Length: 181
Image (cartoon, rainbow, N blue to C red; front, side, top):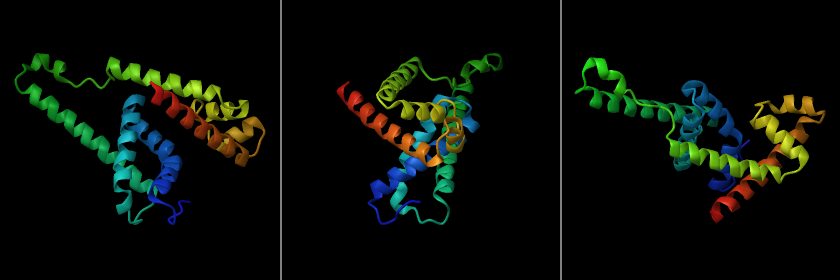
């Protein structure tokens, strides 16, 4: 539960911690491209952060974030359609496929993504064995906390503690490494 008596930044850190993965999964099911889903999710949380002080609580935070994510997807798709039709107006119908926007990430974006992942996994290597295992099962195997607990033979609470500590350690190490570069 989000404590409303905390500072807005701390509240939003909690929102991000709780809802990043569910929003990402939702977006991924719609766009079916991991890189695009990451970008949309990041844009969603950026817009949500900017609008956090205006969130009235008329809906759940998750519903609000999903609505923002849908708007980001629709805005992005609308921009691609406009781009397509502005290019398509002066093409002959046989070459229309040339104007279809390429949704694959650029080579530069792929390099940046690989570099980010390399930094993240180097940071994961610095965590304890249990934290590494929980992190892997959660973010690579995509298991829920209760499934990880069952698989590792520990309590769900212990899984959450290990996961929280792993994510905190990875964030801290990642920030340090990327600040140096």
